[in-house]
Length: 415
Ligand SMILES: NC(=O)NCCC[C@H](N)C(=O)O
Image (cartoon, rainbow, N blue to C red; front, side, top):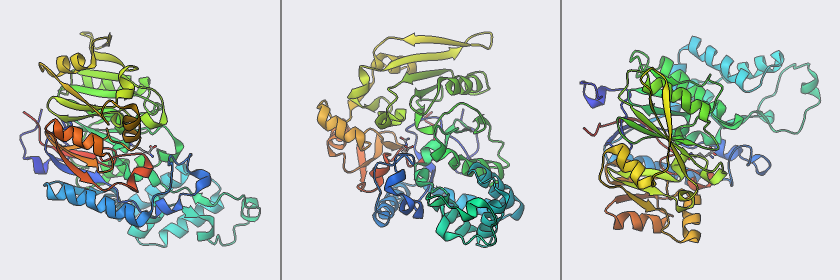
């Protein structure tokens, strides 16, 4: 349960999806977006190339709305810069980052290390996130075959265009943290940032923040699949990105650990790009209200994981209606599922594709949404939800919405 210290001094405290948001981690899109090229869009998990200048203006509007509502906005790039100002930690990070980038040829590794260390910390971080093009680095006396016969791949280090979807790199659960094992190579290195911030940043390093999951585990799980429905119940999507094995390991650590969590609802959703995470089709907007994409309702299976008395886990396939599963789990008489885009399959399809279901609650009944999903937004307002719209034409090309772009660190607990 919530500790007795004041909310502001807590480093991680997230026991719901809707508690007043006090502290959140974002990444402002940078030059990595301009290193997206048509040939590699699919592998880098993008469907189009955002116009960086406008994407940044939209993201600044997002952070303004959060600050205007009392949220302290932290940026990944600033926290990791704080950490890497220590030369030893910087060297450790660069070593690990280059290894994970597949840079194993010693001459190339040394040349890239020298290139990165020639910059100040902030520039180095921007460069690492943006990617390093072969044209950027004149590799001095690299007498290796690959230095002579170059293939036509333009990068030494791939860009990290998905970093502005900070939701996925980790999940604050209770007073602890699940550091993701990302499903795809394209996003795997992103979690190095959260690893080093958790391990070395003054905000976290002495706070004994338990790790419920770690990036070294072999089974993938991503934060977009991890929803905190209450201080006792989580919903976790078994999806294109999150494996049942990872869910089981996380469940053991939460249900058998000394946490407040008693039950995990596993939502088995179609393994499809547009439904890549549970939060692209299902988010919580109030004590008893959720948005949902009608396209998954017929195909959804829900399995409940709870504590067996002997330290094992119990599994049950819950065939009740989703409304009943949620109201039972949350001890409510009734919950309302608000269909993203209404019932119309064309409108729902369009608005779900542009993350109409991916709302970010900043307080009970108050959500941030993409303005482009106007049908879903009006439906939410008709159901009594306060909707704070942000511009989204460029940000949405990355296939994520306001919840995807934010990693809550502190929310006021609901009770
Ligand atoms: N929680 C989320 O739904 N995040 C959206 C991630 C979009 C990103 N282009 C990806 O495919 O991973």
